[in-house]
Amino acid sequence: MRAVLVVNPKATATTAAGRDVLAHALASQVKLEIVETDYRGHAQAAAARAAVEGVELVVAHGGDGTVSEVVNGLMAGETGGSVPKLGIVPGGSANVFARALGLPRNPIEAAHQLLLALHEGRCREVGLGRVASNGTPGRWFTFSAGVGWDADVVAGVDRRRGKRASPALYARVAVASYLRPARPRPRLTVEIPGEEPVRDLRLVFVSNTDPWTYLGDRPIHLNRGCSFDGGLGVFALSSLRLPTVLRHLRQATSRSGETRGRKLLRRDDVPSLRVTSEDPVRVQCDGDLLGWRNSIELSAVPRALSVVV
Image (cartoon, rainbow, N blue to C red; front, side, top):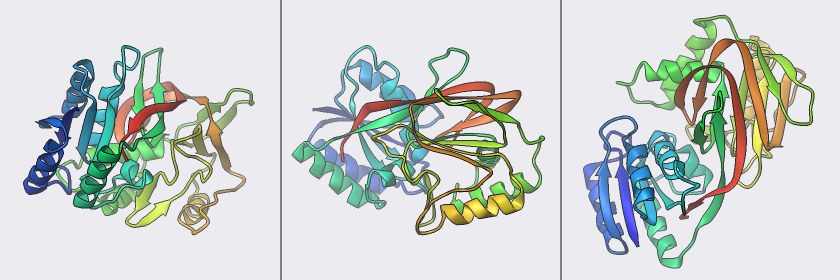
């Protein structure tokens, strides 16, 4: 088997020693090429090249940003032939996609599980989400996409790229963005096939799995019924007043993780939806800022990718 190991050396939990151990272990089972990323988009380019060259496995060693880039690279030519399998050895601070798949957070343990899965031929077919706008092919996401406040938080964290992207940093930026929004809150409309449009929403969050993220070791649930095997989860609020935000934060972090309320639009298994806004609003995918949009289409693509687990 031909394989490419894509390593982000700047990720929180990646080290040169860990990379060498992982590379040596993989090389005992596959014909291995190693790519160390040194600019944004490098992982995506490396994965796309691997797919074109007929490589059978691409292993992402880094955080969620590295995994997202690798997935988008693998899926760039999905209509032109078979898509390489994906392997993941977590190396970031959150590692949402890897944790949702049940992979260990410890890179050494995750590497051991990957090698065992390769030996036993274990794979899992997972669905992905896709965001498109203005007829463009768009971007794939593994666990979440958001419009509004959460995308503003991603933009705020991006501006602090010299700092470690820890849960504490995200929390500080989220509070600052909530208390001092740079622009008036958007008025969003959600259109789900077969339903009446829902207007005057202030935040729209779309999940491809549950939990969609973690606060340290605590999972955050917005759509309990959402999974890699079904459609997308939709969580949208028509108010961002403090009592509403605190109520849903408490629900999302509770043991049951069930979210409900009069100001909430929630669906757990949606094949597609459209989000529009009169004024441009920020959009994010898997914690990666896509920029400003007036309209986006989101869709679920079942069994899109094989992951070695």
